[in-house]
Image (cartoon, rainbow, N blue to C red; front, side, top):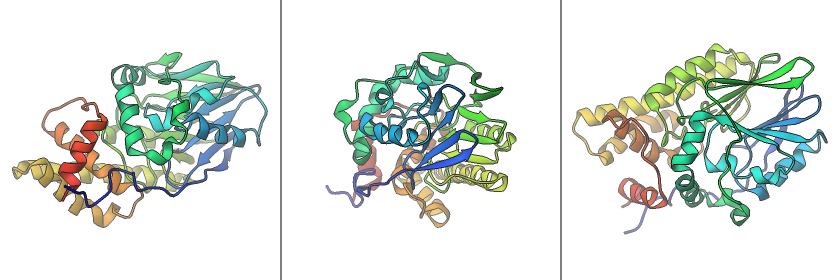
Length: 321
């Protein structure tokens, strides 16, 4: 049996060159067209990273970009959540003393980190150039439950907040209140497909409301261009909510009609394509999103661990001819 659409992002071979973008005083994004974004904040005597890149090889390009701005030591890495495409480049930063994450993220790593790594390498071959250099899972050295403050010097601070479940069970945002800059991780996307395969979709809207309440003036989304004013930030938050609500509503209607997973997928694709179908990675994320929505609406509280084998089986069921 052949597939009409290549597995996940296997056919995505166009290299994206991230760009360094100043966001506010001492705050920078490392922004791709639609690959995962990351960033950093320069304090008085050290640098804090927000996420890394998928591999040490790719992270060295990030490091070179940082060094065009500052030669201060990179002491801390903040993980907004745990997916391999965001965290496996951590070992490239040999001055780091602490890797900080939420307690939900630590639990996620312990219960599904290796399976996620194996799965993502299969889904995103382009993003794992130099995968053989990865020494192992990226483990936090400091963990917080709801909030942690990282002093930057001069009275400035970076607030890390776990505002609720959403994209994963351990999402955190990084907030520079003095200049209104927010690093949202994949809680918010900017006109890119919203991955919900490991999500708590029913909770996500409330988490987005909590993000909106911060009223960010600059927002680095998980994927997509930086949002540059309060209205644009609010719009991206609203579009992320709309993507998720359309997903849930269409799958719920399919279940009510007695449809199988494949039937629910066809219904969701028909409902979502007119509004979201031209967003990057939409075709990649939709099978995983529908599968998770189908489970959640049928009472499966926690996302089922993805494995490379499960990925391929799902893709064949939903995308196979």
